[in-house]
Figure: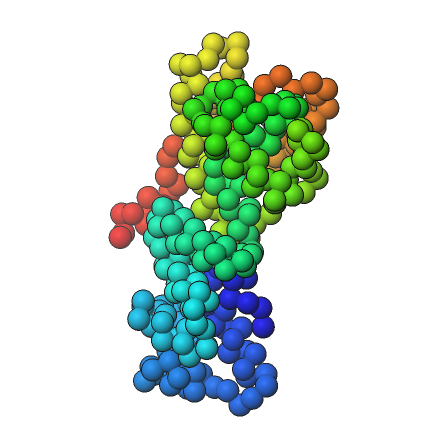
Length: 279
């Protein structure tokens, strides 16, 4: 069975634990529940099926029943908090605790590096900027950033990306590696939403901060059908890919830009209005 640090969903870990025990013995949900101190023989099955949830005390009991101890038990309990968190800030805090527990015990968390990379605007900017500034100090790189950042922040970002395989260090210069960080659908939305919020705030600031010749803002308000919406998404994705190819073909990087492709609703759909009226 995989280590607990390779999971972000405690229910999947519990299910895999049960399946593994069942494979080699006559293990049952009743036995599992009894070991964890629950009177209901089907309670843990309901938890794994998403029909119920573990409390803080329940998480400790279940972790003990699965013979977790030390940082692995703490990781499992933090994973329960992460899965039940209702806001992005709560999820982020819980996942960062999971990362810290693993890091302090020299264990790698699946999706940990991807989460760290995508949660902040700084890493993608430094990854583009450092290779075109050979020999530059972290402080010199920091001065090129439009938004305030310290040389220490730049140094931490560089060290992280070298370790993650996103940058290669050649003497006093950096070059981009071909590595791509991809995360699971469970964790990445939290990090990506954090970055999108930062970039949206930067975009709002750019309206006043930069001359029209240095930035481009256009918009269109339109009524569309569901079918047209799907076609628009496909067109935006195609456009994004073409822009990437133009950027890759650029021989000299003079500035690092951010392109936000934003399409969002300004009205509710008829079905949603009916649901609100009937709720």
